[in-house]
Length: 111
Image (cartoon, rainbow, N blue to C red; front, side):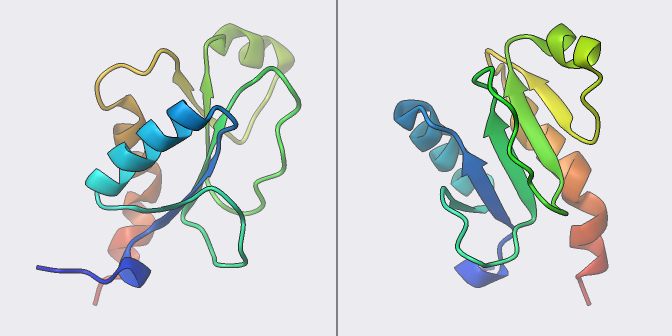
């Protein structure tokens, strides 16, 4: 069944590295998500941030996934309210995490 792009959960990718951003875009679109790299006022289902070692932007109310090569650093700093996915990304770790985070909201939006 075909779904319009506007019906797909929108993922905001805050990833500076263009090759990584485009690879993630392709992968997530293949998994059935709509993807944007710039906030444009539309409500997003989730935010994916690539940890470059800087302070994390405030994602607002959306579930947030941080891609990081140093999970322990986040734990030591006591960063909470985000879901961590370890880099390098292996298999479908990001897709699985997004599905876990979004499943309740996706199911509640179905008729």
